[in-house]
Structure formats: structure tokens, C-alpha cells
Image (cartoon, rainbow, N blue to C red):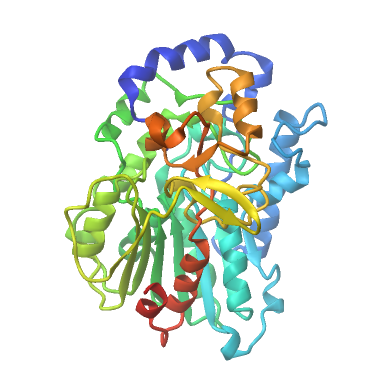
Length: 441
């Protein structure tokens, strides 16, 4: 989402479009006519919504990305595996499988809302962690319209549809007599949708708390407002080869325009709320404005039970401060996880919700975010993907820090080295009798 350095990139993008925009293998840059959407039947069972969505994703990808039966994604995932990664989901898969022990979380519901150009996969590991902690809870994740299929569908998506699918997800819990505590768990754009639902949604009766990761109340760039005007004559702000099975890599001008429209008025008294909130933000976040997120926490979240996990990095000390902020030290560059050494400079926007153990995005995951090197050469991209000794996981600001990189490749962070602490905080937050401050000390 952080692609608003518009003026310096327009010529490059236009050249890419001229070279590749009409070629058959890049048909995924065009709308399919079968984009993920909001169910016409607002009372459609969530289980059926999940099945319908996965079937649609498979149909689109089979035609446009698996036409020669070979996987176009790093990791050689099958068509069915990609559809499961990108599609909405529910844990457990059937409502009838939900157990009834209050001590194991019966009565709790969690609605997960992913971010822009992402998919529910960015929150799947977190969902599994929640279910392990509360095995009798019900966890659901929606798919934002325009996502999950091919990036060409992002050319026509509308933020109003994102709000509608959020509303559908909330109402799917509101109809259940067995659920009396609902927590909205948003990542990036999903955080804005969660906040707005409190004011604009059809019902918020059961919502007992917000969990907002990489909180997106304002874009990082002050040029975000220009996306709507650029969208009139330019489709793309960044085009990549779409090799990530879990999410889009290219970024449409419309995606930026819709995000701006969604968030442009969030920093106001209109969206002040007094229910409990747990936020987690990186001070070096290159996608959203972390200072704005911190200000929102201090000014517009008024509950006595509120917490902000602030991952420190290379940025200057923030100017805004208030009670409830817990700062996490940056840590040393050299890290280790399950016997695997790696280098981790700072917490990236893209990795805050993902465990180092994740098989796709983790320390030894099959996918490394090396797309910054695609424009240089295939060899550079391959070298970044394969190098394990000197490459560094981190946010975009380290890409130009030669003293930090020391000759290694920069990979945008796809996991959170402090994931375990984050999950302990989230699990505690969902327990009304648990003291989150003690977990964060």
C-alpha cells in the first residue's frame, strides 16, 4: 500500500504498462468480472459464504494463473492450496463443531478483517493461535471484495463494499445466540473498517473490544489524496510479477484511492469510541502513518482498558504520549528462532500479525518479499530469495541504510519477531479478567 511516491514513479509505471500490459500472460492485470463480492443474501450462512468464495477463487485462478497446470507462485502451491490461503475461513469449519465449555472460550467470537492487497492468510496464523487459547470460541475471517482472485479485480473495487462485508461478518455473529462477546480483529485497512463499523455498522451490541494491528487511520504519504485524481487516467502505481500465493504484489491506483476515501475523516471526534482496544504499531511503519495511529489511540480511544504496543525502530521519538502505551525495544540485529539464525532490523507493517514459524512468511518460509529487486533483474531477485546469511528482514526505511545492510539484501519483513508476546497480549485482552499490563511488562 505504500506507493504514493507518485511523481517520481509515473514514467516507470507507464513504461511497464506499455511493455507488458497487453500480453496474454498478464491478463491478471485486467478485471475478471468475477471479483470477490458481498453476498446478495445478507443472511447467507457463513460456512456457505466460505465455500462459495473459495470456489470462485479457484475458477478465476484456474483460468488466468493455472492455465498450463503449473503453479505461478513461489512454493509451487496447488490451485486448491492457493484458494484456501486467499479465501475467507472459519475455525472450526462448522458451527456445530463449536464446543460449549465457558472455561475454554465458549461465547467468544472473533471477526478477522485483512488489509489492502492482502488476503485472510495474513491473519490465519493468529486465528489458529486464538483457537488454541480459546478452543470453544468461533473465529471467522472475511475476504474484502476485489481481493483473493487476481490483482486486476482491484481496479474496480469500492471501499463501500469493504464496509458491507465487514457488516455481513458482524451480523453473522449477531444472529448467533451462543455468541455474547465479539472482538473485531483488524489488520491495516481492516482496522479502519473495524473502527468505522462502530459508528456506521448495522449493529455493535455484542462487540466487546477492538484489536487493531498496524492501525490504519491515515496513509503514510501526504500525497495519498492524489490517488483519486490519478485514477482517472492511470491504472497502476506499481506492477510486479504476482509470485506471492497469499496476496497481491502489484498496486492499483484505485486501491490507493479507495483507501484514502475510507480513512480521510477517521481522525475526528465522530469516530471516538469507549470500548476496550488493543493496538500494535511499528514506529517505522512505511505504509500507514504511525504517529497518526498513536494520536488516534491517545485522543479518540477513551476506554480505561486500552493498550498500544509500540515497536521502536529507527524513527525519532514520537511527539505524542499518553497512558496505556507499552514500548518494545528494537532489539539486536542478529536473532534466532528454533535454531535458525537470521537478521531482523525492525518491525515492518506487513509482518506484524505473522509468526516467525509461519510456513509461508516465517523465518524459514518459502516466500521472501524481494520484489524490490524485480525491476533490477531476475538474478537480483533470485539472489535475494536464496541468500540466508546476510539478508535482513525489515521495513522499507532500511533499504537505504548501508550501515545496517552491510552488503546484504533487504527483504521487507513478513513476520513479527515478538509475535508470541503479541498473542499473549491478545489472548489476555479477550479475557475480561486478565491484566494486559502485566503481560506487557
